[in-house]
Length: 127
Length: 435
Image (tube, rainbow over all chains, first blue to last red; front, side, top):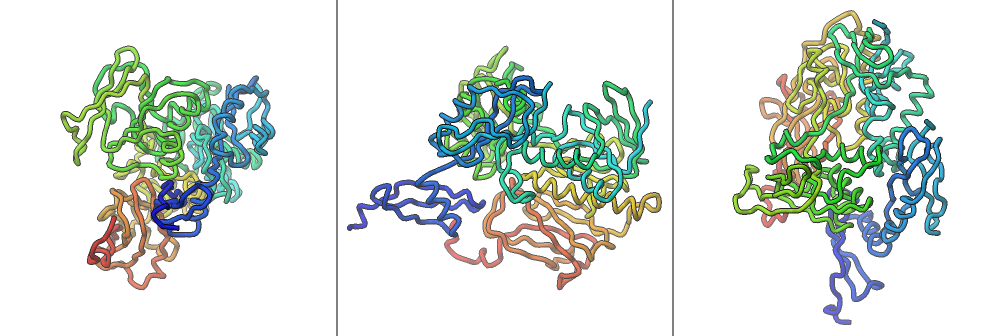
């Protein structure tokens, strides 16, 4: 196969360390790619993950009834697929939870059937 | 007036104060924490994003989770604390005066004091943006508290000035809450915060980052209606003719943090160039028995480093009470630490000569980014006593070095050592050096 049919599909900026290498994703299609420009293995792993299946921990707040504060900070207990973040945020925004709450309490189980729970980031006592 | 006493009074119950008090308690001395907010935890409570705790707990936590772990430890070890209580004065003989709603004015006699008041945000006044005073201008941390703790959105369409971490994290946070962030504007030619935040908070959501520009006018009389941004030259003076108008209803300022040192100054401790108190290698201020740690001493990038510094302050306060309390003044036999080329400030400001056999922890920041540098310590006669390579330095990353002078081959031959970040000598003579 001629080299000319391959091209840079995407440039990923590595966030593993402050060096911030620009890693080029090179290939014909999304399935057959190689990575260039990384300077360590952690960078390569990051680029592979970020290209094929980018994920993020989601951190937001949820409404609280009867708490000493009107909101409780929450996070997902595992990283969530990046393109599901908006849907997850919409679900969390609609829910309301009752105080008292303990850090680590599961507030939404298995959100969007992704195998990820939304958990409380802190304790919150009742008024 | 109600009076209390404690071995160590800790002013502030944020990441620094909590960690310091725990160390005091571990040594079986009494600590009393005084906090002006209604709960323990400090600013990390409003930093609901993750990325905390990788050094301290070897796992990635959110700000509130990080704070909760320390709060739990304080409560479990029954360390007393006063909430909703404002310290108004600290004296040289270590009396602390505070006020609250229940008891009015109170006096606490301490043997040692740990300053852990944190820092405050620079405001519009600090950067002189002309225009009226409409509603809709907030500091980024203030907006963060509204959105994450109190449940209010300060506006709908935003421009954020300053690409520090708080500014970029707020850009993503507001986007997630359904707001529009038109741009993050940065006066410097490069991003001030971490690359991670640039990628995950701005680039992930296609939020434009405009470097080399600043806000030069705020439009609107009752409510912000937009801002004018202008390109700046190397002296940060605006370039006439480069103005652009951006429509928005809210301007967030993320333009730097200043250690909060009114109490420190009032007590008579000396302040250094970075805005924090002058300290020796034991984090002791120029008043014996008064220690400083966390963002009141120097603004840190990572809360983990705040906790580590605060633990040292706690341990050193205990050591002071056990060995030096009531006996002597601060040692006069000192080596001064000075910021040299491409170094903005250095902590500590002084090293006690009697402590030279111990590990000395240096912390400093550079003035401008550079690659492939050499970090070095030298004496006044240009004898380099320590050097180390580093691939990349940037002002937003605090650099820490642990040095034991007894283990160094060369000893300083002056009572002043200079910390420098210079291009590596071999890099200077290389050809075609690419940046």
